[in-house]
Length: 276
Image (cartoon, rainbow, N blue to C red; front, side, top):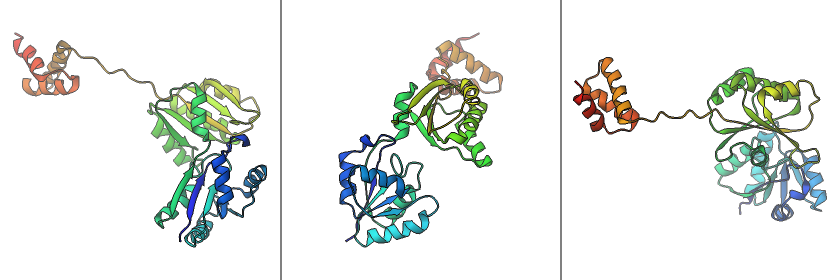
């Protein structure tokens, strides 16, 4: 009988956030695949959980992924954990989930804290719609492409960043997006948690001159919404006259203006035909 892969969320800082269901899952599984076994061992010791660990991280994921899959296909249940938060979110655990699903293995989630959602809730920026952008690439072409792709993004954007890359990322975001509101959230749920609600310009100036420590989540305001033009029958007819000057027939102009404005074609055409 094939085993199950459990994708288990772990605390993003404060170990007290570990859920009873997650603890039960780790106690009941056959083995745990961990991003860093040393980090996971601290969690296991805190909750008096004793289970075999296998390391699974970016640089061994292909080799270890096949080993883990073979064990699951052999009937063992595996719990996948990352150092903090949900596995498979900006995390090599995604590959393990993919190969398990491709092999017909059952994959279940035991949800836990997630840094990007927590950061959005604290940011003070619009949260109705947002996009998670993960880490900006350190590769220049990939970084440029990523930045260009978000220049006109209207939703709130969320990035992760390491301390030694923070200043460069702030400067690149400012150069690409202009001066937007940003919440710089450090060390979520830990002793030194902080939320700096500022602007990209001020952030570049501030972090140029202070030591930078900790792990960061950046929540950035989306591009400003451009209000759509409100048309009346008269202004829609004026737009139709512009189309006529460009060579359209009166009928074609009325049709195009109707599509643009939402005003009935017949109403626009009537105004055009009544003109002397």
